[in-house]
Each structure stands twice: as C-alpha cells, then as structure tokens.
Image 1 (cartoon, rainbow, N blue to C red):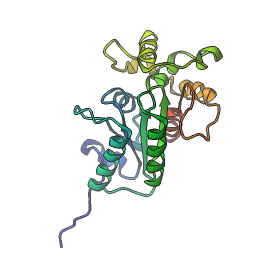
Image 2: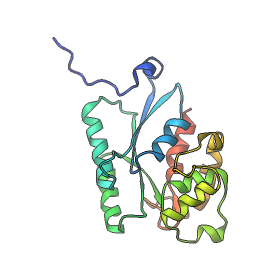
Image 3: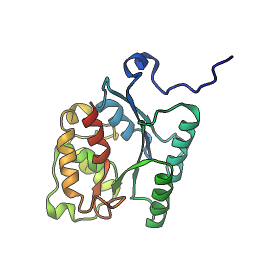
Image 4: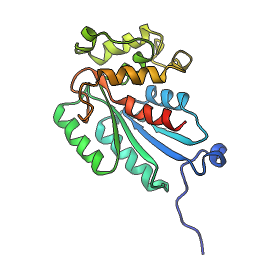
Length: 206
C-alpha cells in the first residue's frame, strides 16, 4: 500500500536535526523584511522556523496572510506542538478589518504578532529604546522605517542588517514588553509591537 501521508515541512538538508523539534510557521504581511529577520536570527537544533512571506503579486492583506497558512497546512503534516504565527501591521488597515481578521485567525488556532504601525518598530527596539514621550506618539509606517534605518537595523533598501541585531533579541523583547500597556489586547492600540511574544518563544526554545 502506498504511503500517502503528507511530508513534514522541513528543509531537506536539516531534516535529520529537526526531526523531533517544534516547527514555527510564520506567515507575514511583508515580502522580505520579516522573512530576512526570522530566517537570519533564529537557527536552533531544537526547532525550525518556516517563514512564509507575501509574493510579488501584492497579496499582503491580513486575509491573504491567513490564506497562506491555510494553504501550507493542506500541503504538509504537522504535530500538535507546532505553532502557527501571523505577523502583520496595522498601518494600512481599518480597525474593523483587523478585528475580523484576528477573530478568524484565533478560530484557526493561530497566534498573533501584530505591530502598530509596522514590524520595523521591533527592529528599531534592538538598537534603541523609546522614551515615554516617543512611545506616546503616533507614527506612520514610512517614518518608523526611516527610524529603523537611522539606527542601522535596516539599510536604505529595507534589508535587515542581521549583524547589527544579533545578540540583542532579549533587549528588544524587554523594550517591546515595557511599551505594551495592556498585553491582553490582541493588538497594540497605540505605538507598540507584539512581535516580542513570538521572539520570546523562539529565544526560550533555542
């Protein structure tokens, strides 16, 4: 009888090392920045990270992020302790859209790492803290991206400079947690990022 079980989504060259490890599947709104960060920063023999970024067709809405997780689940086999995370920004979406998306994601067993205004805030926090006055401001995504560039977290093309961030993950988590006035909220209502919740899990399991 032919074995028709779906394969585990491990990279072939790493399958032996990760056979019994947890898999973190991370679907992102962005095409490259988030993927560069997670793939470049987190390598462990105890787990594997699979980052699913947006394609070049521009399908980056929260709905499409969730669809990519659904498609990935259909293709591969998963264990009970594998985790599915959605990394999105609130800068381009209305509160009603975010609220609906969050409810649908939780129904499907996904965890959330939402940033306000954008993911680059978490990169910024690796190299610089925000004062109380700064964290109380509302930022547009383009301004936050410039701020991240000014600290050396990303270059002028928006590529993540891993060499400037490596070893500062715990510091970024600490700073992001300090900014999180109400961690029970499913996404930050003010300037803040819940990416720290995902990164904290990755650090814990290294």
